[in-house]
Length: 205
Image (cartoon, rainbow, N blue to C red):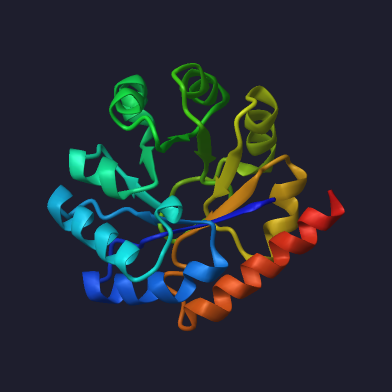
C-alpha cells in the first residue's frame, strides 16, 4: 500500500499540533514530530500524549536524534542526511523501531541503505514554500533514487493533489506532506483527499 506521511510544520504550539495530529491520524500512515526548537523532553511528552489519545505507536515518528524516552514511546525515528552515520547506533538502541533517513541524491540514498535505513524520504521534488529560493530536484532524480535502492522511497517537497500520480509513476512508495495537511485550513479534509489520491494510484500500479 502506498504510504501517506504528514510532518509537523515547526510553526505550531504543542496543543495545536496535538489536536491536528489526533484529527488526521485515521487518514495517515505516519505522523512525524519534527520540531527543531523543542527539547527531547517536550517531544517525548507529546508523543506519549498522542499515544494516550489512541494513536497507534506504529504511526508516530520522531525526526531527530532520539533520547531513550523517545525510543520507548515512538514507533519510528527519522534522521537528516547529515546524521545518517548514526543509523547503526540508533538501530542498536531502538531495535523495535522503523529507522528512516532523508536523502537528496542517489549517492546518499545508497549510503543510507547500506547503513541500515528501513525507509528513505527524498526531496524536495517540486518547488515548495518551505525551501524558498532552492531549485527542486525534480522527478528525474526521484526516479533515479527509487531505482537505485531496494527500500521504500517517500517523495517530499511541493506534493500537491495534482502531482501525486507523477511521483508514484517514478517509483515512490508514498508521499510526505507538511503544510498541505498539518498547515491546511481543513487538515482532515486535506488528509482524506491525499489518501483518496494515493488509493487511486495504488489501484493502477
